[in-house]
Length: 458
Image 1 (cartoon, rainbow, N blue to C red):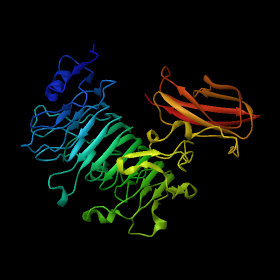
Image 2 (image 1 turned 30 degrees about the vertical axis):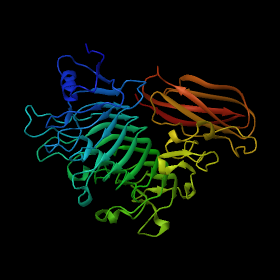
Image 3 (image 1 turned 90 degrees about the horizontal axis):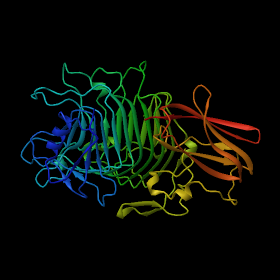
Image 4 (image 1 turned 90 degrees about the vertical axis):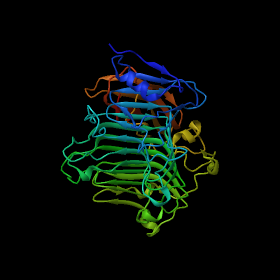
């Protein structure tokens, strides 16, 4: 039987806390209890995630706890190496080091070759990073070298097991001052594996001063294999390199509800990456609902949003307006009242990281601006755990039912039943007591029905 948790103060070497949790005590949760505390180790090896663990800040802390690696005399260039399931919640990963900065925050891969017993990354491992901040991730001699990633998948060595993960979910996070790609999962073409993970979801995140792509993801080169489910949505990206995402050879990628502003050319050794804002590839992949402002390119403006090899761009939802940030110079990307980003997202909410949006302004009833049609938006977030929002619009006042069904057609819950005014409405569903799976939600009004699919992933 597993223990519930241990509480850890910042005065202790965090590697010792990990050793204790992974030992006979079988701890499943490490709670960080020091507000703003520096959690670190002076060990000459990065801290390792050897068994499934949850590492989270104690709720209610005034400041997020901070992770660093403090051995300034070794070749350690990362804070954590991930070999098994891990959840990080409510923490900061800071590459700052008074003598030598760190090149990586989190890397997924095998342990060092001279380790005994050596630890290999478990196939199907899951990573969930929620409400975290990555900052100041630069390699030594950064001005003249390549590198600096917040989240990075390693390539296995010759003869080593392949690295193939399960679900990678990064949400409600901030990435600031990153020397190269913020999220790099691009080693798949360099070794034999069908896909580097089953699922990659990056949503409700803000990127600032990222020197190369915010997200770089490669599928394998075999289009006959099943690719990862990749969903990148509700991102706010400011003052970063021109190319913010490159998703190569992955079928079915969805890139949507994005704001990209005030781009700058990448460093000289990355000048070739000033060719477009985003590119997705392969059939089923779609770019939609994206706003760009104040961009710098080395190619014609008309090619700034790119899809190839059967992928598509919804040109009707590619915008070029000012999103009306409150104060971007002070890292305040709050959308002011009247921002054209409100209501422009695929979800029916605001574009960009929704933490910067006024939830009351995203979808409201307004008799002076009534919907032109009866419509049902895709729920957000999707996949979700455990709560999601469903936005629907009525052209005129109607008797409405909004119901959720499972795959067998059994009704699970009735979310809305009754008279609703003309306008746009939001329904919420908390499925905390419902099993993971695929569900359908149906909107009925005035003899018409609309149905959409959603995925509960716990």
